[in-house]
Length: 184
Image (tube, rainbow, N blue to C red; front, side, top):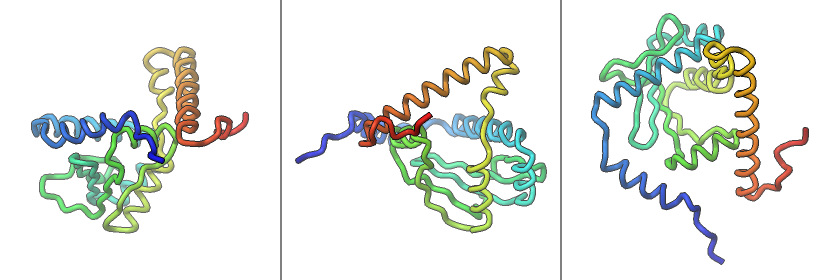
């Protein structure tokens, strides 16, 4: 019996073909990387222990790679991140194994970590893993600064319900029973 392919396989193939041919200009890549570092630093500033751990790794370079996208960051003395200088040699390289953006989204909705190939310094890899496991963006807190506590709490609760519904839907599509997400 032939298993049906994902309805997203066509989109995956399209993204692969287009992504390999169309490359954004260097200035766009640099701006996106710069904005990503600013966002990561915003999240890190909410977690003092994360900053202390990163400060101990100052000057060390980590390279992230997914498909045709790469980004090198360096830990600063302040316990934050900065884009690594051109030509910096990474001490740790993290390569996302999942090439499909839909596969990554599916894993994220299920609350799973994507598979990562790790090359380089083991101690630095352990610190990065700690950051991934323990640092979370407090969306509700940031939203409360903009619109107030009550509306932010309401929006956050609604978003949590949507994510839980997506997890149940994806779980059902993945062959799991409908009630396996956990009883409340």
